[in-house]
Amino acid sequence: MQIVDHRLKPGWYKASPHHGGALEAPSLLVMHFTVSGAGAKGVADYFVSPTANASAHVVVGRDGDVRQVVPFNVKAWHAGRSVWRGRPNCNDYAIGIEIDNWGRLMRTADGQVRSSTSRILDPALAVEMTHKNETRPCLWEVYGETQMSALVAVTRAILAAYPTITEIVGHDDISPGRKSDPGPAFPMGRFVSLVG
Image 1 (cartoon, rainbow, N blue to C red):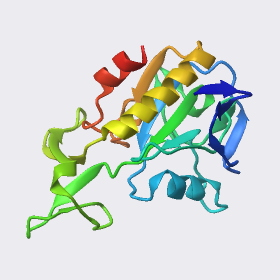
Image 2: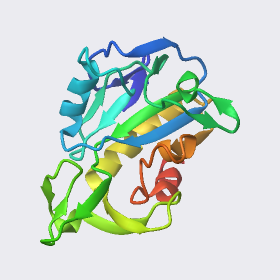
Image 3: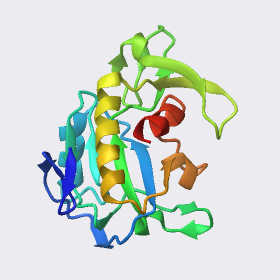
């Protein structure tokens, strides 16, 4: 996988209307979760719809499907109110990757594991962990190896094409208290070591 003219090759691409101006010399890569079971196609379709009012550069599905909706040299609308190292408006200097994942889950009185939309999930997909910005543990969806392998490949391509990127963070780092993604189930330390 490589980046040619600010697009992943080989790769699926469809333009989202939800973007800003030029993104020059990005210095940050931001990881998000989708809070969805829609897959990369469903999330990408949402980002290209007129009503979304949000976008990310890339979506990575649970099955390893990768879809790009904003070129890497254009600002996507993924960070919202955000600040990193005293610098506000992370959309101005960050590339955003959405990872298809439910995030926070709940165990119901009948013992089932459910998503935020009440979809019943396999309990093997849930892990109990405490978010770094919280004090109580709860259930989170795990990130599978197929998805992580695709995410590593995408990230390596981005870092090779944009050597100005010096840090990889979560949405919860740039918007603490407001956002919890990619959550404690995302193996950030392992991921950063894998992408070099």
